[in-house]
Amino acid sequence: MFRPLGMKDTGFDVPSEKMNRLAKTYPTWTDGKFVEAERSSRRGRNPVVVLKLAGLAFFSTAGDYARFAKCC
Image (cartoon, rainbow, N blue to C red; front, side, top):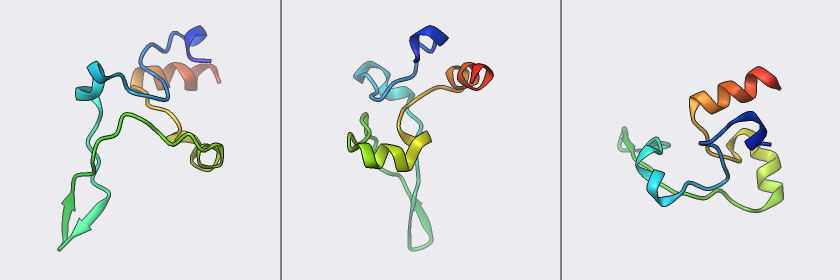
């Protein structure tokens, strides 16, 4: 699905050489302060989880996502 659309920075895993490009997330509050989440280069492989999370099933860049949104 990704290759025909020219989506070079989209996949289900983040290669180690691209980990520095992965956005930081702050999902938890501790004493009223945001706490940075641990970076992970992989998503869960459980199909039930992938279906429930849909958009969270892969990593992408804004440019690649725009290509996807334009065609689909």
